[in-house]
Amino acid sequence: MSTLSEIAAALLDGEGGTALLAAALAVAIMVAVMLAASAGYFRIILNIALFAQPDARVRAIGNPLVERGPLAGALSAPGLHDLFDHFGRLGHRMPAGTDLDGAAAERLIREHHYEVVGHLIESVPDGVRPFFIAYARMLGAGEAAAIVAMKAQGVPPAAIEEEIVPVGGLTVNGVRKTAHAESAEEVVRRLRPKPFGPLIAAAYTGSAGNIGRFLARVQADSLADLALAARGVDIALSPPVVETAGVLIDTANLRALIRGRTLELEREAVRPHLVATGGFELVGDRLVRAERAGSLPDLLTAISGTRYHPYLAALPAAVRDGDGAALERALDRCTQDMVRATASQYHLGSGPLLRYLVALDYEVRNMRAIAHGLAAGVPPHEIEGVLVVEEMEG
Image 1 (tube, rainbow, N blue to C red):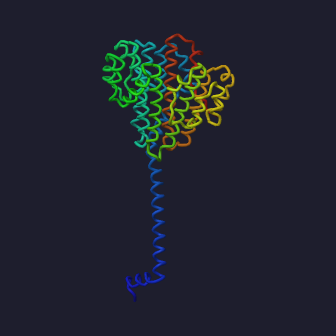
Image 2: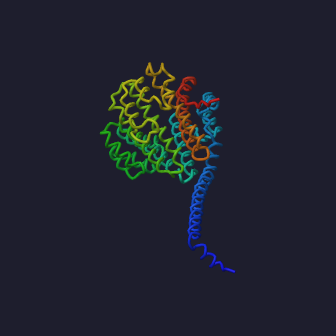
Image 3: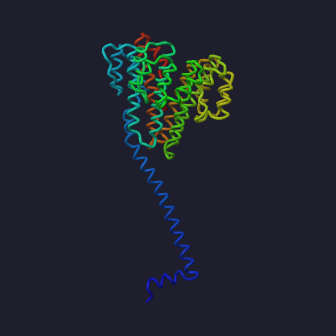
């Protein structure tokens, strides 16, 4: 009887050995392919598991203050305390004091917004967290830019401290130190170590003392930073994040262009408001054509073929009459629809988190508008006209 070693030697000898080696190589390749496929499948399952809890959380919380029913209840509130009680019943609990006026309500809502974003950052998976951190950094840059603007306008330090809300690397101590700076330039220097410090400095230097241009550049550069962060997330998780950032940039650019055309501004005055990179559909030559459009009809022609075009083209009277407010409301609906579609497509990943983040911003806008209007005695039907409502199909 042959031993195993003799059998192996016989098989490896001559043509039989060649066939065996070929078969072994084929098996090895098949095993490698199966392992690679299994690894990819395992990663997908792992990502689904990582997003399950945070997705379930934001679905449970929802964004009620972009829905007609909850908004109608808010509009019927007889006073600010009743309004904040209504907000609380909808999940937006804020510690409204006895001396609640319009300014205090405004600050409370912003504080609440930033707190909710902070909690969201803590709950999202590591793979997409850089994007949400960049979003908070954008909020911080906005508050920091407001300090620079108020200092340039000679606003007293106490009033600055009362107005500014710490967020995104801007601490209470940081607000106090910058509020007591001697000049806007000193504020910029003191902000430099902050996460958004270089962005603030570059925008201030480039604005040459024009505060309006400075604020525009901060907003545009913050959105560009958001797009960069979106491309920095885990590549397996990046598509919905990059798409959402791109939609936010596209709509911001369209708002700037609409305002520029309705106000008949020169292109040079509009350009600081534009984000040159990171868009979704409004990029490259299409963005150049949109920027060069001399009128609202020309602008619609320039963006033909994008998902934004039907929303604006559906309002021919607004285009004809230069009703920028109506066109911007259409962009709000477009943004909601596109982000909702992304959330549906990527419902097992970051889609629900992204939708919640964007809808939260609209909720905050609505809360601020209602609180401000109620404090100023504006009739509810007039307040209702500026609210952002999510229109669900079906």
